[in-house]
Image (tube, rainbow, N blue to C red):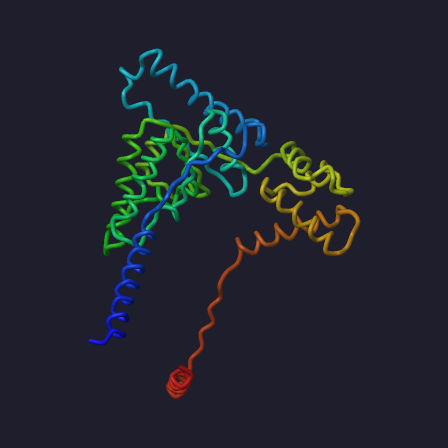
Length: 316
């Protein structure tokens, strides 16, 4: 064998080894707790919802007194886990509330989306879930599952393939870990109806997030419109004019209106541009909710099908 061939073989081995190591690294998931981004003072919610969030924060804060100082950890051994589910329409402040609870408790937050733990490798997803719980426990972080319906959804009853088995295995591991975990877990979802009843029973509290009422909308408009931004919009007027919008919608409307005015070389952002920005968001949501895909069927001849097949072959 010539020197050139030996070098080529060595390079092939090194390349295969490198590609294998890349796959192994891709399979490894790293979960890092972070400092909460919002406090209870940062979130604007209807009074009822805000009260429930405060109850949750105080409940978690007082658990040490109740279980450790007052001895209920002896009589209520399996009641230390605190599962909280924040559910409701998108953009209503669920994620911000999770951050605020963690900040109130002076703890970091470990945010987990299903995409972070899902793996195409068999058995890796349950392993990733275990790792998430382990990291939260070691770092004393608040464990927060965002878009939780993806992992807490109903189990498959009529399993027909390996994917169904894998899904059920993942759900079972999650149930087991929730049973054993003796700390705070927060879930957030837009689709509580997708939750498996077994998970519902293991979650202590459920808080429904509604679209902001009039007073909240006024506060949100005032909060998201910077004092430095020249404008002639009246927060009370725009809050009364548009009621079916979330805090996220208001935030996006302010940003979109500002960019639209800047693009038009305007010296200030007038209220008509604000109105346009809100209406754009409402129209897009309406289109998304009511949009239907229409499939039109028509008969074609056998000759037409053959001609199309031959055409595709010639283009390959």
